[in-house]
Length: 145
Image 1 (cartoon, rainbow, N blue to C red):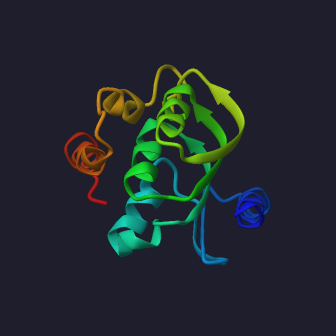
Image 2 (spheres, one colour; image 1 turned 45 degrees about the vertical axis):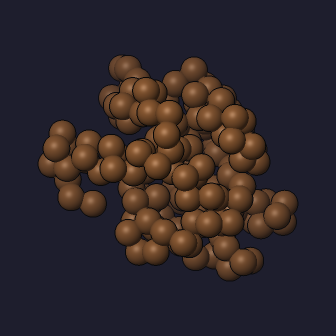
């Protein structure tokens, strides 16, 4: 596991990806997309790819942590991770490493919290997260992902 986690982290940093997924020793997906969009793309393609996967993510907030728990990711690396994401991962015994821990993930304007961080703070059941996140993108942002 540590070799794949180290490899995912190296690929994330070297290629400046925002997301790297390794499963069974193979790089399955890389992305430059921001937010949880790479997570949603993988879930739509084949949600079983996340099970026992190793993920490196540039920014890990509570929304991505909920998806990781629900889809049974094996281990995570985050350049930046929120305290709420860490608490959720800890309470679900999901192994993770990080470079920097922050109080909350900031929105893209850098003037407040990420809307998905706010949206998911009251979600305690990881199985509800995916639907809530999709609804957010569709209804509020008018994006169909």
